[in-house]
Length: 124
Image (cartoon, rainbow, N blue to C red; front, side, top):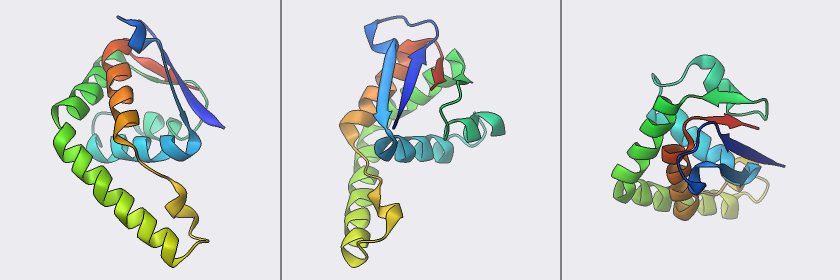
């Protein structure tokens, strides 16, 4: 299972489509929720956890994409810290389901580029 994001009014090829499997999507969406608690509505925040067509408008998408790109150094450090902790948690308790969700800087940057060029998007 994965999350397929479709650009609403893409301005480039990068803004047409983004996909992440469920294991990678959940940390990306958790990052968005954490960094932008006032940008999204409760319905959008909850909708990002499901494949139900939740819409993120162009202004919101651009803000998310710009933030990631403008703060890439700090985000990379945060991802490194997250991954160290996740791996330690998984080693300590192999049954720790929560430690099964990896983060990846390359995928985060693909998401940022998609956001910036999507003209808003739908989450399927």
